[in-house]
Image (tube, rainbow, N blue to C red; front, side):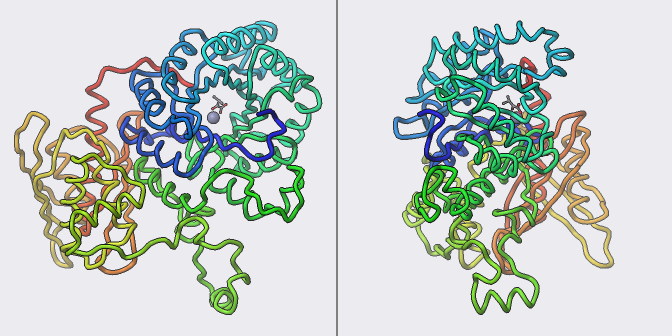
Amino acid sequence: MNNQADRIIIFDTTLRDGEQCPGATLNIEEKLVIAKQLSRLGVDVIEAGFAFASPGDFAAVSKIAETVGLPDGPIICSLARAKQDDIKTAAAAIKSAAKGRIHTFLATSDIHLQYKLKKTRPEVVSIARDMVAYAKSFTNDVEFSPEDAGRSDPEFLYEVLTEVIAAGATTVNIPDTVGYTTPGEFGNLIRGIKENVPNITQAIISVHGHNDLGLAVANFLEAVKNGARQLECTINGIGERAGNAALEELVMGLHVRRQYFNPFFGRPADSEAPLTNIDTRQIYKTSRLVSNLTGMLVQPNKAIVGANAFAHESGIHQDGVLKNKLTYEIMDAQLIGLTDNQIVLGKHSGRNAFRSRLKELGFELSENDLNKAFIRFKDVADKKKDISDWDLEAIVNDEIKQVPDLFKIELVQVSCGSNARPTATVTLRTPDGQELTDAAIGTGPVDAVYRAINRVVNVPNDLIEFSVQSVTAGIDALGEVTIRLRYESRVFSGHAANTDIIVASAQAYVNALNRLYAAINQKTNQEVTA
Ligand code: KIV
Ligand code: ZN
């Protein structure tokens, strides 16, 4: 492929840049579940991690390369600083992928050169060129990013890009690392690169951007109009600080407004050929999965995947939509898989029905996980008459979540009411197998439960987010609780679903505490940052 690619390449960095946001840390099994779903979604490239950052990152990239990097699957990529050891480690991690990419980066802005790298421009050019050539000795597919391109001197950027393409870079990615540029500026930057980098036709132009000013998606769409053909994005827009450009917004923007974008690809405006390879019906499911596993909630008014994105509240709008959807809807909820929520199973459904529906939903569980999920399903079906696809997803996501099993809840009991002091009793099994019971009074039942748990676990922390959402409508709905807590400067998340929201709250809290407990008891890995 060259930068004349006639469609957009979607490069998903949920598992790398997305996972860099506080509290979104995922373990290997969770990363693998997300990678499989990204493959179903149809992304072209999965940036599976930063292999050199820690042994855990290396293991995750390797596992994804081996399992998801199939010949007809996505390209599996690892990030690497422009250093030999990073690049060698990235190459080892992606080696079992049918299609593997090394993505190496080095800053080019004067601010980064002066204060971070303490290097001159000629030194940066030479390192970038040498490291791309080194990466090329492992794989043909090499991407180079001049970090902080958005604040770099364009003339210097042209020089660096010319050199790295000559050294073998097949993709040059232009990051707006600090989310500083505006759409017009970013579009001009891409046009400048097309016009001033003499060998640019030998590489795909990619863009990467952060959302500090809320402009990442707008910047990307302007970049597309000026020749960018790969978009680096994350599910739900998660990522460093204000996040990255959101995949679902880019894909649906290009889809819904294809008549506007088609001419920039040399197509007739009315061409129906898709501009990306994404199966849009997988978008909603992927969004929920990422939100559940990372603990990063989706705001209700979030474009495309927010709970209100397709809701019409005002009477005038409702009236219009009833007369004709086109009055106030620019896309059908079905397009993102939102209305595929069928009532499928009930308490009489057997194991085979359960297994085959999960398979249709794209879950491939081990026998052990299937057993655990089936027990949970029976338990939920006893309390809730109809089990929908979304309930099934919540149950399975809950069961397959590989939270370290350190503290386990054996009992949660609360007493509360209008004239009562909320009191909770909890029994937990500790990592060394003891059963400890404690009780506490709180401002409400959840507060009382958390205080009682704290008395047993005894790790000081601040609860910084607590949220309850129902999976479906109805009084018997499953409640999903997501919490985030802070320990020193680190954030840990927990998530759980149950028809009893007090039990879900307790479980979500213990899940987060288990992650915290595992992290503080683990030897700290080598710290590297992108
Ligand atoms: O934001 C950034 O510049 C990055 C690079 C590593 C591409 O994430
Ligand atoms: Zn980034």
